[in-house]
Length: 85
Image (cartoon, rainbow, N blue to C red; front, side):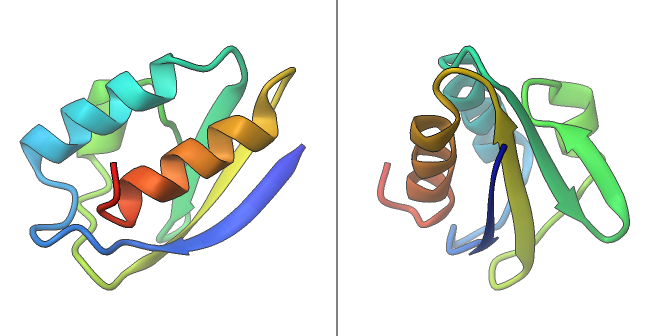
């Protein structure tokens, strides 16, 4: 399992469109991917779950992935949340 604390640097945080794009990014990977914030642990491939987080720019979360491509998955999610994707 790979885990990393990441700060959200998307201008508008995780509102509807960025959440949909993040779910698409997470779905590219074979690994199970979870985001942990505010005492919630959400499957990054679940649109409804991700919408429930309501995270804004500047907040931190923990990304964890478990599977064959876990390191690549965490790096891809970090790149997305950093606004580099």
